[in-house]
Image (cartoon, rainbow, N blue to C red):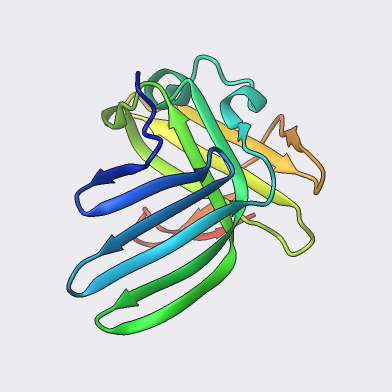
Length: 168
């Protein structure tokens, strides 16, 4: 297929890979809302499905066969109803390729902390419509992405039975 070398325009949004897999810019402008943000790679993207050794779960079957995640510095601005907010922080970038059957997931929870010391954790928990639980998980130690073999969940749900009151 043809690669969109000059970016993609859809529904008023413009997405451009300034430097493929390293720097992405997203632009959108409407009457009450505008955004101009750029994601610059801090750590290279890694395939969370591969590092999670997850070949048969609901994520691998229903959501993607490649799920790249990595940390980025995010800069730019957001304007809402005429009030402009400058953005300069860190966060995750996520690129998935393959089947995207959102109907196969009942719930989907993310934990993507980026710590001040340069380490980061990518944790995603999915529960399928058949109640299969699966995890995507990897840790960046400041030098490289490494596999997290197991997560032991200790969640306390709030009274609404959906929100998490605490997790550790």
